[in-house]
Length: 457
Ligand code: S3P
Image (cartoon, rainbow, N blue to C red; front, side, top):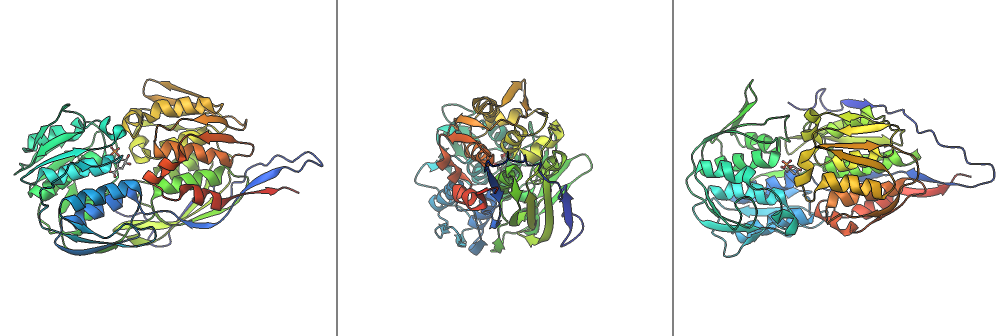
């Protein structure tokens, strides 16, 4: 099930590839962008949400090591506190202690999930199995995101929803006893899958699911199995959950988030010299699709598996500046790189030739309409990019990227474009880099730490 080859297994992606560095004209000192350092990235966002929620619904004291402490993780922690769960403060570099309960208490307040789609969709799954009424909302971005993908199957299971719009937050949910479901998901999504599996967990009923195109991240399945629940995948792609396990207090350490690592990998690839080491990164195969795509593009990356944390393979990445080439990302690869597409698209703008990202329509319903924002911002910094139907086409170039980037408060758009400042001569001005705190606290500091300019003489 885990990355093949056991502890210490190596995957070498063009690791000796070297960027061709233009020789400076005689007498003209030209500063070079150097990458260096050994860095750990913040804890995995998806796993932190899931561990907080599972610990919250488990009587007793659980300890979560190296959790993500970002705004999104705080949204899950604060909604759990409103449901009667005791959670110690989320502090960078610390552990968190959760004293959970067998059943949540009815909250006296509206649960506000802020910017976090994962907090909203996963908690609605657990709450659908509770016999009380609850109201859930979010910030302006989250209130624009589609919810029918979860309210429709949860309604079929027996939950009742009310709200101004059936497909959007704020929603009022009346949970209760649920019946089992066989559900063909309209899109491959770990948030839908996690929501329905959590509904089955909270209501003690069977859940059978099938994803249409590719396998979304499987953290929920791994964690439920670790508590003794049977979550099996049959030969027709059905994932079958049985409520036959038991949540017990746990002590688990969260691996580093590969989606956050992807931004530092991107900066290292764009630099001219040096080498970056990222330590303790989650290497779950449902999350590392971006490494395979970067390999195709010529990226010099080596990954070495070091062990297991929270039931997930974990390892180190070494990255060297590399000359990149355009690629085609087919629809089958999209679900595995859904959060890395902004970084990949930005890197494609620095590659030789054209890149095509096919059937990436899901990008329209993320924290922003990432599909249009990627294309318009790439054009704003001087690159060629277009949206054709649900495809994103990016033409690579070598002129220094310069211009203003509109993030609409989207953390991954902000971080992807800020990385372009690693290109010599770049002048990219991101309108709201602070929103990186949604998933990557200390992003700007980490980027500054790994990049330096040195005179080439
Ligand atoms: C997540 C699943 C993905 C991803 C999000 C986190 C999760 O969303 O984009 O950042 O933790 O389940 P979708 O499942 O909706 O694609």
